[in-house]
Length: 280
Image (cartoon, rainbow, N blue to C red):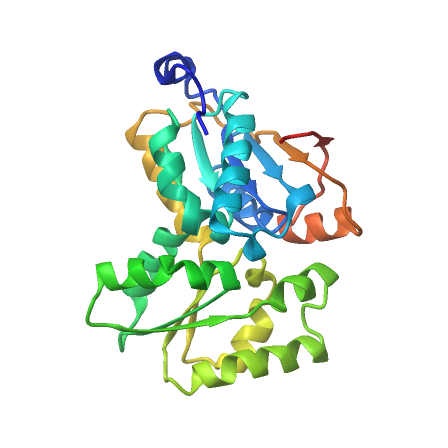
């Protein structure tokens, strides 16, 4: 899984004018891109949605790492200055691997969400909802326990939330019933903070909030991830130096049903440049 023969040669080509790379197994990561576009409007973003291999959440650890490495390799060839893994499943099992292998800074979406949740919880009872792969990886549990071992954590897989979000059933009776089925046991744990551990879940935020009630604060990893990236670029003097509305280039490995509708609902704007590409 070698990324490149010379980390130094790639690092030397980085500049404040280089783009930011973002990848996800599908289009859910566009919710992270949306926040990056709000917080860092001058930064060009290259987004890769590996639609040909979705979902990552049901695959083995080895396969997720292989696919993640291929996505990173593709974006690295575009001379990116930083990489955001906008996929909880990939973040949970491939972040450490890519951080060691790549010559550019790598950000996941798990640690920023955990830090935000622990900063705002009042009773130290935190819930996490995510895919089976993310929950079973133990990444959220380890991250929470490491940062606050005395707090209590409650994790719950909510696999139906992904297809419901992609169908556009954001405030539907079926979605509300699924949310109640998943979340009422979590609500009974008296948590006061809930991490949305999948990039699809922010689209269902209204329904999730309705079930959990006003006393539970929801944490969308996109916001703290965007803020962390901004801080990192400032520290490394890699922020784009001028004011502009930067371009967004979207690459996909397959076109799926309702592609434009799903993607634009996640992104919050029109997808103007979409290119079909092949990666291993």
